[in-house]
Every structure is written in structure tokens, then in C-alpha cells.
Length: 460
Ligand SMILES: [Ca+2]
Ligand SMILES: [Ca+2]
Ligand SMILES: [Ca+2]
Ligand SMILES: [Ca+2]
Image (cartoon, rainbow, N blue to C red; front, top):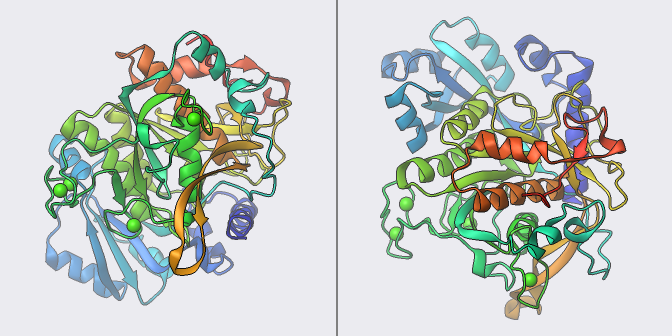
């Protein structure tokens, strides 16, 4: 129910955005529609503020806070922001998350007149792009890997192109079950962090972030149970362990996956999405971890300059940002969907196709804003399942079939990791060009995607 609900609320938001024209750069339009927006689309009363200069001093901050009757919720200064500020070469950071008694949009309206404010925007809430698991049937068929209209990963496997455990991928989603029987061998760990010693060994501000970090709960337990099914499903498509005689196989039989959980039971916020994106940027720039891409099977809300800045920091670090086009069946050229619509060079936007090559009925598309299609209907992958009931219940390893651009996206993220394993010196731009340049022309995607084609890794 949650998933269907999230899709409906996302459609409603996009519909409102379309009816009011430009929601992206016209805050008046946003303000006009704000009364109609359901409360779950942004955190009520909260807004993210960025000053034009990194440090403005507390006096000015107090004036601004008084003007909008606000309290500071959090000063956000990620390691990636600090580094960006020092280098002045990529989008700088230092965001203030505040809560205003005036409400989000009234506060933004008042801040528009203040010259020292670069931007102020809602703390949007994102939802993942899976649909229900109604199609859960015991087919056992991984058509996304082996089928005519699949990714052709099985052709790569046959040529002994199986990925590499020196390639890392970041999963920005719910948590994922890194102990799953078909994922554990490909679970990545933060090499700079010593597990369970209560210390922040790598100095990134997060204590014991071994398998990643839970930005929703602000704790080190990345995986929190059966509610983290969506993130676990995504992981299995990228890197389900192949050739082990059980379960599924990901595009990569070998890869290392790290998690940044920011989607909780009620979705995820812009503030936490930014921290998740910056988390991987910092792991790469500070520790040299070979992170080639993040998987982003989520969306909703409106344009966020602060989130785009974080995506641009990832771009500067050479990390692709692979994003789901959305599940409302609409045209993203006409009504923008974020984060897939951000025009940052590292973004790859992914539509969903069926096992017969049709555009999935739910899939959003866009001749200039969605790059390619990939398998997203009837996709089998890994999930956590409850074993037993009540006090004696435990979490076990299971498998399920899901639909969504959420499921198409990790096929492309897997492709990025596979290409990187075969071309260790390829830049993010080169990996993106290889993925887009090797698509197979597909009639259902012609005029509806940039490439007019579907994912095909057979020539990697
Ligand atoms: Ca740490
Ligand atoms: Ca530690
Ligand atoms: Ca947790
Ligand atoms: Ca397997």
C-alpha cells in the first residue's frame, strides 16, 4: 500500500506542477500551488537555506531566523562540502536546515528579498519508484539478464565478463540486507572504518559506518529489517552473487556494494539525500575508494539546487548518478521529474521496459530527459523475509518479483560497474558514453528517450 500510495502522491504533485507551469525556477508558482500540495511532499515548516558566502556569522543568521520566525534544526556541513569550499571549484555547501513558524513557502517568500541568500527551498520528501509485488509468481525467470529484451548480461557472463571486487557502487535508497545469502559475498565495507569500536576511525563524522550509513535513522545500522526490501531488491540486480547455485545473479557476479539509507518508512528528505550523495563523494575523494556510480531508484518533490549541487560534487569526483525516470507514465520533457531530470553531466535517467520490449505502462519517458530503457517489469531479485512469528521471528533470505523504474535503474548501474571492471581507467563520462552508445534500437523507446534504445552490455 505504501508503494502505491507513494506513486499516487507523486503523480498528484507532478500534475499540480504541470498545471502551474514552471515549478523549477519560479518560486511564486511554487508558492501558489503550495496550499494544494499534500503534506507528505515536503517536511512541513522546514526549509533549506544556502548563503552566498560560506560563512556569514551568527548575527546575520539571527536576523534571518527572526525574519522567518525560525529555529535551526541542523547546520549541514558534510565532508564533501568542506572540501568543496576549500577548493572553490565545485558547488560549495554549508546548508542551514530550519523550521519556520510561518510555514515553508511563506518563509521562502520572505527570504527572496534578502540579497545574502543564494537560495531557500523546501525539504522535499522522496519516495522510491517500485510498484507493488503483485506479480510475485514463482517464475524464476531473470529475463532482465537473459531475455531477448534483457540487458544481455548473460552474453557478457559467457565471455567471462563477471565484474570485479575492486569496483564499488553506492546504493542510495533504503538500507539493503548485506547478510542476504545471495549478496553477502558482494557486500562492500568502508576500508577506513573499524567495526564496532565506537570510534569514527576514518574521520568522516560517522561512527562505525562499515557497510554504509543510515541517514534516515542517523545510525550505523544500515539494514533495519523487512522494510528494507526495496533497497535489497536493487542490490540483487546490481550484484546478486552469480554462479553460486542459489537465487539470482546480478549484472555483476563480483562487485562491492555500499549503502546510504535515506528512505525510511515515510520516504526520505532532501537534507538526507544530500548527505547520502556527499557520503560517497567523500569516500572516493578522501579514501580513494573506487566508487563508479550511485543507484538512485527514487524521486518526487520539486527542483532542489542544494541536491543538484551535491550531484555536481559527485560529478567532480567522477561518480555517475544513475536515476529512475519515475512511475507515473508521464513525459518528463513536459513535466520534470527529479532527480532524474537534473542536467548534470553524470546523470543517467532510466525508463522501464517489459520482457517483450514495450515501454512499461507505468514508466515515465522523455525524448530529451530520459536516456535509455532497461528491464523493469517482472524483475526477480533479493529481498529480506520474515521467518517465524512474534518474538521468535528472524530475518531470512528471500526472492521476489517487483515492477518499477526502480528495478530498471540498477540494471544500468550494474552495467556501469561491469564496464568499469573491464576498463579500469575509464572516466565517468566515458562509462556513460559507452552505456548510451551501445544501446539496441527499440521501437517503443524511439522518440521517447535520448538514445531510442535499450540497455545492451553484450559488447562491453
Ligand atoms: Ca566513519
Ligand atoms: Ca569504528
Ligand atoms: Ca538503522
Ligand atoms: Ca545467486
